[in-house]
Amino acid sequence: MTSCERCAGGVPKSGDIADLYEFEMDSPSLVYHDGILAGFARCKQCRQRYWAQSSDVVLNLLWHWTLLPVADTVESAGEAASSDWWVSLLEDARGGAHSLHPVRIQGPPPRTTARQRKAARGASRGR
Image (cartoon, rainbow, N blue to C red; front, side, top):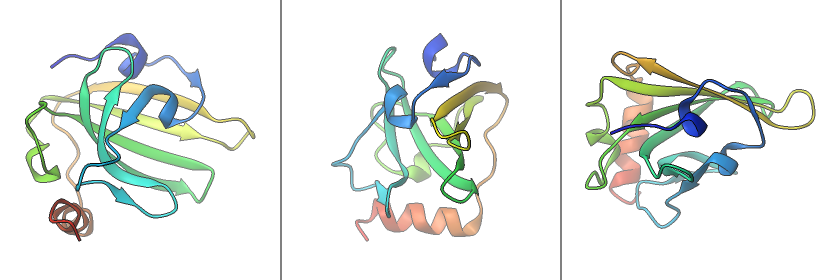
């Protein structure tokens, strides 16, 4: 699994998360509440597939996305934590216009909280 300069290159970009990634809107693993919170997504350029999940840093203004690379055969969030790299992405709307700051991190992905794991398990079961 590889990433491209566009989805994990460390160069700030204008736009929001949907400008870089296509979310699998029909996936039973999609977690949605007034916007996408977690789900499978693909880089629009290199087609690398990720499990992506967001958390608010500043409500409605700044989000942190954790993107874990996954194979095309992965169907649930629980299968997504087996890579030696991941992408940390800040989506920033504090200045009015959205900007994206993706950085590829070499090393194991961050551990999720029990609440995040429970939400992902529930979403993958269609709840």
